[in-house]
Image 1 (spheres, rainbow, N blue to C red):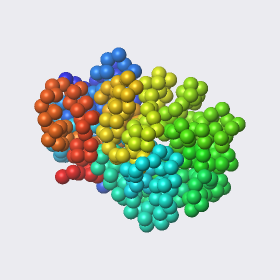
Image 2 (cartoon, rainbow, N blue to C red):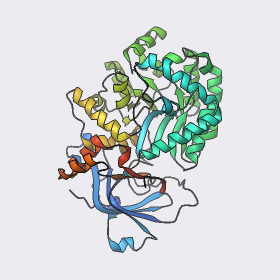
Image 3 (tube, rainbow, N blue to C red):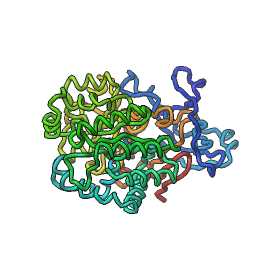
Image 4 (cartoon, one colour):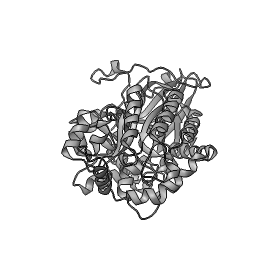
Length: 462
């Protein structure tokens, strides 16, 4: 099925799109106009919220996207007269271009310990995570891993991410410095952790506040970088530290909060023992002022009915981490219930508990998680989650997530069939939905031909 649709709302009055361009943040070296010819797919709404999923997306079989100063200027069906107006047209016919994937929960210091064997959450932290994170007190080491980490994101078509550093401010500086080199949209924060971890990884309530405050002032809204207040999870923070985290949120209401919630049954019981005065795990965060529309809670697998309701009422956000939930044996996230409660959900890899940087792999595992619950994940809902859905979960859908005029030009060029098996499977695909589903289930970094950030090529497989 082909839809020759323009992202200009005047050409499509039934679609309510906000095309107000955000404040430019482009690099001065960018060319005035750039254009690409290819097939394009992007979402304008959540397919699960519409009776007809086809109304949720725009697919142009042969399209022309024009980029100006790092922003989307136009997207429409290809016509030679429009191409002639451009300085140059990059020919990507045969490739599928989508908005860059967005990762709503990932630990960059855990990159080198991905796929560590044989433990569930708490033992896994003690055995693998904490010793690895110790090394990030060394700024030079943090820079080396930051460079590798950013490259892996781009190699997998991910152009934005919400990222955990370590307890060391140096880890955040190194990551932001690397992202800044390519004008990447990234949110990150220093871990706050003042108990129940090795001494070499502990800060204090006061030092975590002071260091986070310095990092906020230094990095938040600097170009395309933003900051997230980052208590690791309730068990590794004292009440005093959580109070300081809430104070930071009150002082800087525009910053994010990122942490973990109800990932593992033993973890939940531990929280109950540490905070017996609170009604539950989510109530710990709510009590200290850490919930809200820019607060992202990773996992949220084992929520009570009261917690589902409280998350909805506070407009808090869930990061769905399929590969991690399966690898650590944590449980099956109920995406359908989140939708019914009008809770925003973003897609996440959760490396290094997660086993792949690829959001295509995340979606493949998400499909299986839904199957195990007797439910379905459509390819359109899945790809929405990886793009516009995650942008909405991060309150960034006015800047990224689709190809509406004025959005930042972050996108990925995908090869429909990068392996012999995919090529064989594609021969039996006779419609868009089936082609996309095969890509979602079988795809990975090998399908990423090129990745663009703010309109500039930052990764090429060639």
